[in-house]
Image (spheres, one colour):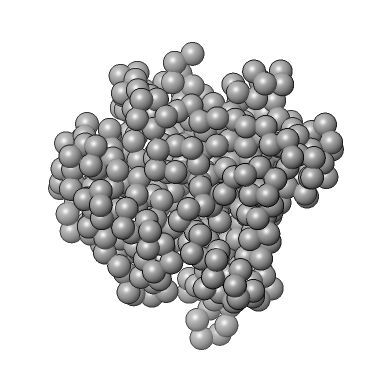
Length: 410
């Protein structure tokens, strides 16, 4: 089956929505650009030539397919058969490059001459800067000033690749504010600029497009696990901030009700403290960055309903919203969402390093932290695939600071 045929099997949003979630809540000045993008994506999505070009780049440049690795020692500890989908082995070190390759090919088909992007942990920024260099396009990245400090290594990588990095000082100085600034740029420069969104958030068609481009993770995992054990897994586990790596892993399996889908959010200092990024666990339905989904809001009288500050030790999960398809999966009961704290994620990062010699990203560590609970639900012969979304090099300074001062946020 061709990639175009596999993509056609994935759920398409109805009227730009997954159930009640999604939509296009954007300024009137952006509607022509959104409309142009949707028309271009519909044409590309059904075009075998588009997918042939994307697939060739994913294989030759990114290094796909990524490995599905049986984590024997970790499996013995948690009491189930754990396989890791190794997106950390991709060029640039995370799953983000999958989406960036596809959107860059689309941008070129649309005749766009400039790329912009937002980034939190910096991996999407690095991936965008990478494809911009590959395609000889100027690139500007918006990044919260707080994230610029805690992800300084990725900032340097972006600059070496030729991108201009704009530290965003407004608001909470994190991913939400970076996305605000990127949207302002796009409004001003819609004629020649392609906004390369990094997650399954934002206005339609971004949640749909990014999900489809990241579905290479789940499509590969489905074939690989069948080749390895002769059947489908009992559960999939992935971290969820905006939710692109989880959506990419989950989407090809959605129709198989025998496969549990488990997303793991960032509980920060604990959901009960209010300092967290567990949007699906503790948020409410609202609109953020052009899409209706779950969001974190203030609950006090003076600021009731306003978007609240999200907190996580992981910059990539530090976002007060979530992709609308995740909201729909929660509402329907198709997926379950758990939350794990900063301390639990750090312990899980150390556990994976000790048992398998793999240093994962702090984002991924939240998924690892949920394995004991998921393993208990599937039993010792149960098969779990974990989306190992990225490597941990970028987080080593944060981890070292936290380990030297337990209980303190770097």
